[in-house]
Length: 506
Image 1 (cartoon, helix red, strand yellow):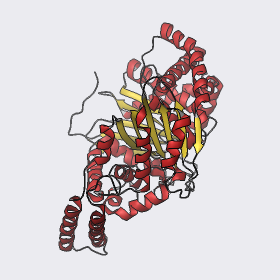
Image 2 (tube, rainbow, N blue to C red; image 1 turned 180 degrees about the horizontal axis):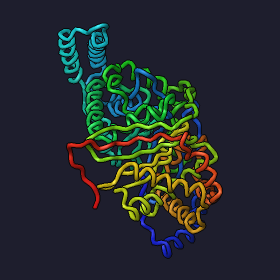
Image 3 (cartoon, rainbow, N blue to C red; image 1 turned 135 degrees about the vertical axis):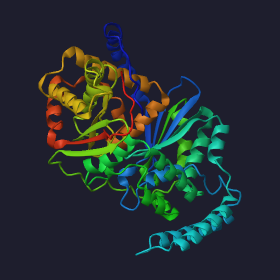
Image 4 (cartoon, rainbow, N blue to C red; image 1 turned 60 degrees about the vertical axis):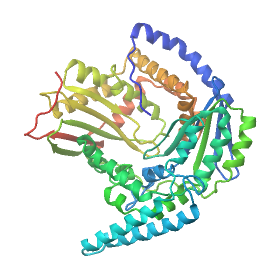
């Protein structure tokens, strides 16, 4: 979820936020008292929150699986299945599933033959590969005859669905949209069918789309840097791999690999469904139980065992490129369940989130070293991840100047207590941001799903304001000294090579 950068006039709006925050907190406690949660017989969790402001509801289906759960030879599977979940079922998206199933088997057979030749050692036969590629294309064309494209999405749109989308991160895969409140049974039926009887049709065609997406992304030099940066920062954790996966894995993953992924991670015990909006839990829960209980229970997958070891020395990565220079600095930090998680959030807002942050004021406004500067504290959450700082040097300025300026600000954070006025301002902005999101049914549904799965309790959605209030200047100094150490950091940068002009600030 993208954060909104706010311009807040300190004397007026800050005071207004501080006055309304207690009222908002009381409102959140009222909302908390209305939440109904039930674990169905198959292990699927259902969370309902009635809000009768308008006759709509927002729904989230949360799968507790992401890129961190992948292994070597299979990176990108979490993202691939997100795409596949829109391809339909044995009854949706097909004109004749019985014959389509046979056609898909022929596609799989053709792909496996092609993959075997591609991977043959010591040398694959290039002429044979051409023949096998043509055979795969023919099989795909035959299977395509049975496909009704985008039928799953069209059904939803015809019933008034808005915001139909999904996303995959390193920690989770989430499907979400909104519907009129009288379409609850339709939603439950579709979720049940989607995760009980999915058909991974157009699989290899969709893989081609994803591979093209990856190629286009790698045209961006900053993305190329980050793709190389993560394996330097992480040497053991699968956070080292981007969610989209490695090209060789994408090329060779089979439909059977994706079906095995589904069988492991898309069972009821690994799913959470959240509905927020114009619903009555007394009448809604029986409907949801009727349909969602049909999803096979499966077994809850265990946590990732591999843990990132303590970093012992600074790591540096320099990428030479004719593009704009860019700097990123990453420090290892604990996961979302660490007692200091909210302190990291406050530090992020203090240092790098928005126009009033220290990095923006120092590097961009005052010293004019950077076009932009900021931070990201929670790119990874389920397991220990990174706290990132970044800067885009201004014309005539260097990565080294920006790097030193960031360290100056971090040293102030470690040695000089944050003033009450500045800390109160940060807390006010964080509260306003949270309240703004909580006013949205979808925003609240996502938070409920995240907290239930990442922190183990949806109730943590409603105690954030209290935890923010408890953060002290001493907490900030303690966490900063513990985290922002030279031995704990990885530095990556794009150094501009000669031969191309680059755009810069004035």
